[in-house]
Length: 519
Image (cartoon, helix red, strand yellow):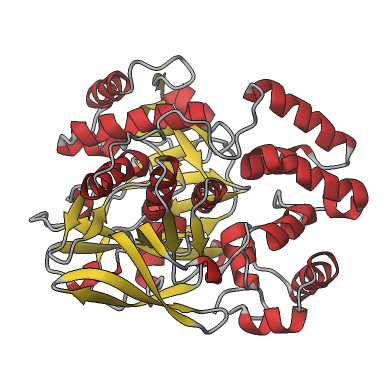
């Protein structure tokens, strides 16, 4: 993946603005249909809401309470397809749901809900189907949960991903099929002729050049305009990064304060606790985690724990904004997560709302609309298509071979499994780096499954322009660990030698403090 701002020349069939999950799927789909496509983002790929999610590919069990069966069915269909088409990118994850004497939903109601969830998913096989446990059985699965008033519980299957890697793989796939994808390209102005957008002015945030771009159709997947519209609703979601728990399963819980559902999710050797869901009316460029957000999540979780977390246990936190259709719902958690395509009088298509899980199907409708305006009759081909980095061999056979090779190279088992999920078929290029320099098999941080070969490969091949791009969006080290000055210095020294980086300039321009945390 090489950035080429100069390639934004001539006329494109479609310009997509916004390099998050919806922009990436739209660009990928349109390119596969044979359109000449450009994709730009004013920052790094997936640097906004698309990397601030709960990292889940799921139907949304809680949406059954609001009778949003259509959305759940659509999301579960996409979950099933993604598990099949991208086993390296999307993997199964079981969730536990405890039922207490004072729970809003008792054992019978939860049983009925999970039976419906399985039915909407097409009655999945045993690894994904729900199971019921009595008090003793459920406590054995989650020994850290308070069982004083526990009646029993359930587990059920959903799926997990690395959201930033998902976006990056789609961008890579679009580029491989001919799309021009350029990050750090800011949209400065929509230019109109007779009330219709005819060009845009874009600025190269890296090189400083400004140029005029032309396209026959335009899609705004940025969500930024929505903050100025009364027809949308912004909700802030916050996640805390906490220490690992004694489980490889996630947990779905209900906050006693307001009845909201929240998750406790294992991720890369840490635990994600989230999310909040509060109306937001502030600056969309300055979304921050506030003390009240942290207090809310810790209190919600500690209600269920035998030994609670404190603020000292918080390793890091992150926040994102959801753009939703306007609704009369009193609380944003009750508002629909479904999406909408709006075409403005100036003929720009705007994407409103949506979910990480169902973005592919929604993007196909966006490209359908674009093709209709262009007079192009080409159908979507992204459903069930092999993902760009998916190995050609059957995944189980391939992964067994790659894990054995990683072991021979001195890469520990957990880091090797992580490499396969992060890079898919490209993992052999990382193995080649380790063959030349065995020290690159070492972990960057001892208790996190990321090795130096991963760092070097991303820095050299994934359109990275600052240390924060690398340590936040390519390898999520900043949100999983508090990097010491010693670790940060070693990272820089290796990048200077192996990737030719200018260490001093990268540190100055990265937005990193010496502690390794984002400013």
